[in-house]
Image (cartoon, rainbow, N blue to C red; front, side, top):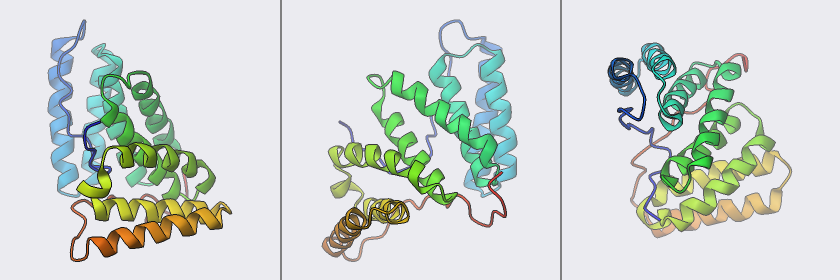
Length: 208
């Protein structure tokens, strides 16, 4: 399995596919690129607007399921960043479901969406929902060699997983993961995370 960078938003081209309308696909790509630029600049409302337009064009342009799922994923992330949890959740869940069906084609996308949903539920305080996604993602990330390639990101991920477990009543397993994260940091003293994920639920006054 190829190395998977933890939770790096997938800047993948929407592209053309099958019977997709080329005009809509080119339009979707323009909005996708604009959304990525706005996201990098930290302008999440503008990123949300552009990702929404990209999503609409994949829908009306009859893109294949994976390209629709990519558009859903990016739109779902921005809705989550902007505290629109109720709208974000089905987009992220459905995006993951598409990738689960197509797992043999690109397992990296599937792993990234497991991680995203784990942290989404953690950020919004739904710890029991977060745990299964953390569990599945951990198995794939370890198998991909992330302890060696992304040690600090992996340690941060385990700390998040430990928090979800602890808040769900699994204290012993939470302590095991926290200790594992600490040992990984000790073995990689001086290193820093190359990617820090956006904290869902930050400054949100409600879960809607």
